[in-house]
Each structure stands twice: as C-alpha cells, then as structure tokens.
Length: 397
Ligand SMILES: *Cc1c(COP(=O)(O)O)cnc(C)c1O
Image (cartoon, rainbow, N blue to C red):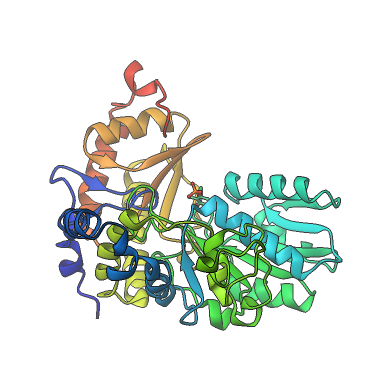
C-alpha cells in the first residue's frame, strides 16, 4: 500500500494553502532545492562540460523516461523525455501519419487541448497533401473511426471537464479500421493508471509538470510502441536523435528505437528537478493513487453539491469516466476562483465558465478536501467573489 502520509511529507506546500491545482503545475518536492543546488555547484560548477559524461547528463532523458514509463504501462526503453508537449504532439502525429501514408484524415475531438489541435493544423498545412483535421464531439469519436482516418489523436482525460476516454476500446476500434493512434496523457500520467502496452497504443505523449510534479518548464515525454520504434520517421530530425550524433555526419540517420525522438540538448536542470519528483513517485502505486483520487473526488462532489446549488457539475458523475479532477460551471467562475485563491484554496479557471479542482493523493487528503469545501461554501453562499478586483483577468488563468 502506498503511504500517502509519507509522500505528502515530501512536498513543500505553504501551510496556509490547500493546493487543488496539481493538474496544472505540481508542487515543489522538498528534496528539489538541495538536489538542484548540488547539481549546479558540483556538476555544472565543477565538472563543466565533462558533466555530460561524468554526471550522466546525456543518459537522463532515457533513464528518467523509464521511470515515467512505469507509471503509464510502457515497455522499458520506449519512453524518452525532452522538449515541450506541443513539440512531442507534433513529432508523434507526424510519425503516425507516415505510417499511414494513403489516408488523409486526422480525427480528434472538441475536448482536446487547443495546442494539440493547433499543432496538428500547422503540421497538416506544411505537409501540403490535403490532409483534413476532423474534430467531433467526444461522444462521437468511436462512430467517426472509419477507414478514411489515418490517425486518431486524442487526449485521454479532457483538460476542461475531466472526461476520460476508454483508451483500450478506442485503440482496438482504431486498429480494426487500420488507424494509427496518438494518445496525449497530459492529464493521465500520475493521475489515472494506464497500460499503454496492454492497450496496444501506437504513440503517446505527455508532460511532467502537471501530476508528475517536475516543475515549471519540466520536459515532456514521448512513447513509441516497440513494433514501430525502429521505423517511425522523426519529423524533427535533430542531432541528438541521430544514430551517431558525435560523428557529425552531413546527413541524418535516425537513431535506434525511441532515441530517434530526441531532438536537441536536454534540459539537465529541469531533469534534475524532475528526478526528485520521480523519487516520490517510486513510493507510489498507481492503483492506490487512483482509488484515493476517486474517494477524494467523490467526497468533494457530494459536499459541494450539498451546500452550493449555484455550482453545476461539469465533470462526469460516474467516477469510472472521470480523471483526477472535478470541474464545476459557474457564470462568475473567474471571480469566484480569485476569491478562493485569496483565501488559500488554489484551483484554476478555464474559459468560459469552468472552475477546475485537481485531486492529487500524493499530497492532498480528505481533511484538505473538507477544509477546501468550507472555504468554497463561504465564498459561494456569501457571494464573496463579487468584487471588481476579482473580476479583472490576469494573463494566466
Ligand atoms: C497541458 C497540456 C499541453 C501543454 O503543452 P506544452 O507544450 O507543455 O505547453 C498540451 N496538451 C495537453 C493535452 C495539455 O493538457
């Protein structure tokens, strides 16, 4: 059994804060400042460029990739870290399209994160082969998987509502129709158990600064199924994805397996921060995390619905169809969220009217949920959000 009291003690969260936004940016592992200070002084400071070999920097994207891979059911040696998630979406989609060259449709859904759709639009435009990005409602995805579709590109957990797709079923349907799959696990990794290998997923991507707690700017990850790893063509053919980067050849030759999805120099400071978060993840079992997440979400929904009738549940009511977040709709949701943040309950707001709360068992427990509900009840029942300064929007919501 995962010892959640022990994992909670490993995060540095301000005492007057209840942090329900780990779905956007995980909190600071207590070990991170010391580990980073050591890395800066002893590795960068003393080893200088020899750190790439001596401190093992160059191996970090693969080594930490495997530790992320354990949490998402990837085969060892098939996940690599680097770049941002938007970049990884582009790489995965480009490689997936090359595996299905005779088809012209990329199928996604309206619950996908805009950046994934934008990256697809940009890629399809520069391919110039007349590809179409077809975006359907989440419930209509299964019926839209036809033999016109080259790639099914979905985010498993909807960032707005928390709605969870059935990866195994949709992947099977896709394969039956000759469709290659790209799964975005941004709101899955560290939130919901996933079995990429068992589901037969072709490509998967995700970020490490949300539930995985790697810190702002932490690198993204990409998974390519072993059966595709040595034939997936990298669209971003950077030198570190070359088979022999230090031969400095004039022409690109893809590296072995997932190594070819590397692009350029890895962010070692960010990877060092992520390593401290993965040390905590090593103490956790994803089934325990899921069970606790469901219990916390159920508690939150029932307590809010019992006392805040002005809030409308935007997330699926059935826990089996929900990720690790709960969203409520409220017309003045932005102002209400500012009022909550001012009182130490940190969630976030997603346009047009969604108040979003993430539940992260590594550091949130039932007493935190009850304390947060008490603050939300006070703000909502007494309309404490009704102040001009809470209504003025900041750049990042
Ligand atoms: C958070 C998120 C992103 C963000 O991409 P970055 O390149 O890391 O900024 C992209 N896609 C999805 C589905 C996300 O949830």
